[in-house]
Image 1 (cartoon, chains in turn blue, purple):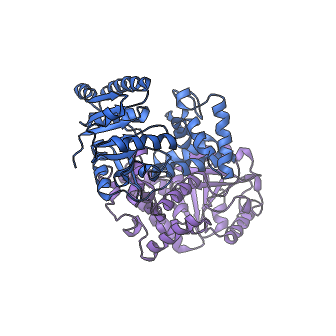
Image 2 (image 1 turned 90 degrees about the vertical axis):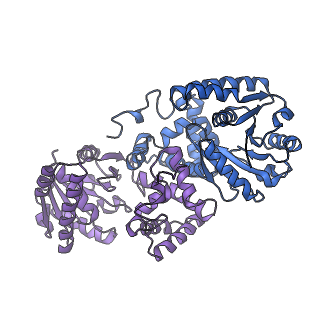
Image 3 (image 1 turned 180 degrees about the horizontal axis):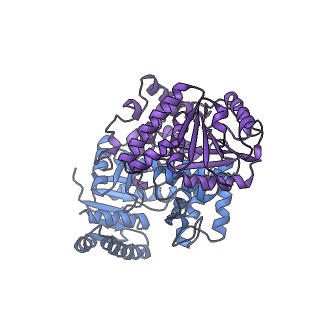
Length: 292
Length: 292
């Protein structure tokens, strides 16, 4: 099966990035959002991203111009769905909204279209039936597209194996490393590893076993990584980290969630706010003498 | 306080490496072991290590020759302890043996000597009293000295703060990054992070959520590390990993321990046996196309 046109449903941060990468990879891209404001913001974000990718020499100027020319924005779902071979849905992580959207997509998309959801926390089986084409439905989950170039492929029990092969191939064409999850699971692979690692770092900190810098150093020296758990948390955003940690039940995670909350309440959200576990733009862990 | 002579008690793999690094850093080194065979093996390992460090340009030939000239081997504990300013103990991880050794050291070492244990799993407080000098007693834990250059400093409640400062300084002179643990804790910092990360990877594998390569890839791509959890496990040794995992109580760790046991029983111990989760000397995860 040939994929020529990709439909992006939901023009938020990730929908925007997936759509732009698809256009850079040569696909025709239709971007849909219910809000005009979101479409306008998506369009201007894409231009900024193209500038950034050009400056950092990931693409040449002409590629950027051509890519932007292949993207079509619309507030009309039926119009968006015309001729799309594959849909990537990134609407709000709300089961009711996603259910409504997938029902509408199922009723209006061409019969051959492959359905993918970019959900981070929900499961593909929650929407597969309502889409009317469970065998063509799969989670296809991006991280940030341009820097963390992982795309998770998570089928539900009814996804046809043919679809999985098509998505692996498409992932590579979109400049991502496809990671196959064998069966539906709450949480993707990288996130599962990340959360366990962060949890352990949080336990060491709240248990007053060691300081932030000592914990980060121990990992950075032994594994040659450019950041440790707290440097990574600052990048993730302490508000996001708090949201994830607060949902966990064990006492150690709760203690860490409480600590994260004190940071969030003081407006210390990490890199984006200029302060988190480190201060920015020159955090200690990036100093030359940090690993000494 | 000036440290000139370091006593290494126990000439196994780590004692040998710590002793050699101390000599390279300019210290006089007395190496003690109860077995003549261990001392001979230690001496020949040091020569091989010097060759290796010279070839990989970490030291020049003359430094290696001088370092080896500063090392003295003995089966006589009293002789070894003469004039030592600091002791690094790496005998077998058996509380009874360590207790006996520390009692003897306490009775025979000069009064000013600092006492450190390189224990991986036991606590400094277990031996501080019997040494007769709890205030001078601290864990000073090396990883592998030449590649993983972390040294953990873990005081017990009675360790004097002066000793901690001396050990931080010594750690840097021994070309390590000192990591301060604020209070006694079962397990060092890096190991705590590592075990949580490996446990999560094990759960994904035994839960049949994903394959070895997918799990490793997800981490390697997103964090630019040169190996993922299963590549690291092959380096640690699946026998060692099994020993650590089998001591854990939760059902997921037990399932992973059982899987590791099947590898160990087949002689698949990782890098050192030529096969583990990958096959060596050219494991898939080091191939150019692995992250594609």
